[in-house]
Length: 476
Image 1 (cartoon, rainbow, N blue to C red):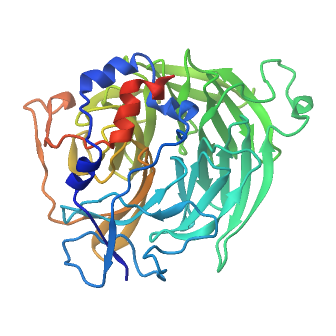
Image 2 (cartoon, helix red, strand yellow):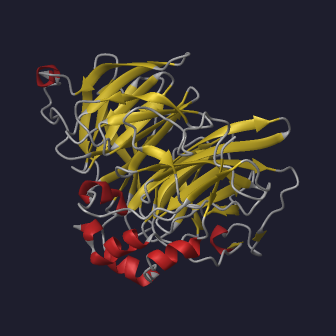
Image 3 (cartoon, one colour):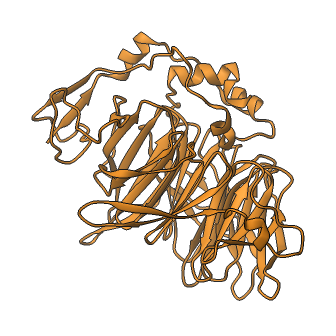
């Protein structure tokens, strides 16, 4: 087994002092814009050499040190071989694991830019970046299984369902892939949306256009109907029938960029979030293959960057993460489609960029470099923050999570990618005797009054990222 020990963080500080950045600075930069659009402008700077820490290997380390990966064949330089021409190595950034509740089991560093999307399915994890290759990793140890290569690079979003994978690219098109999981990974591109000459196949209503006019930022797939929804910075949402790759509907959804989209698999409701600060709920009119606006949820002035849905037999909760660091949540009324605002989760210092849910667990990634793990109490709207994952040193851009049961202990695998160019895998275990860490208010109906355990650690941002942030290069 290869064990990796990294030099203390103060070694890096001696090489490149960390610039001071405050919450006020961040909010001054935001205005009405969102870090979700960073990928549109960020390019690696020529001549800029990345800061690396010294990586040491040894056979035995104490159980309190970080274990980055399970057994792998080792190479002469101490790094594990992945694939020829791969930009990936073990991450040189330290990943502390101070809690028995979680630990980082793998950490990879990408030398050629950032990861913008993560998806998981069939025991595989897919990562999309500004490269034309979508990397494929085996769960949970992140062994490299190969890649899918598209003619147009800069993967903006990816979505996996069963043995299908959807990806969006800088040419504003969507690729559809199929893959098989066996001894060797095999994949095949089966279609592109829109199809060539697809304007001949559009309905004659006149409101559909051949493709999005700007970046396709998000996707959602309605399993039972085989409908793929795509949201774009051109402020529109399109519905595609995957079986024949036709666009069955296209409508202007918001007054600004559509940043996030999801669909309720139980009833087909569509949720969209935008930089205009609103969350909208749409219902499909089956007789006309169109969509109608049901309600607009607008409780935050800041851009909405991420949405997540947590549904059980009796309860359904909608979460939205915004650039003010808040996570608003709504609870769906039984036997109707109305969502009532239940409150907000406060803890992140900077923008919330991504959300993921598994059962009554919710994971949030933020520009403050941390990932917070939240648990909702069954049968109520009370939430608690179980822990904070603080191994990244740049904004956490995307997340994916899945359940992992180990005997009587419930566990989760969380995959995270950050603008520090690292990709990490976390194993989280919920012990049966976990205690609640909230102080309930006297009025149980007012969820906004509950108190969450506070973590006083300041974000540790990479010096290069902070410098670019203060120079405003991420917002041009």
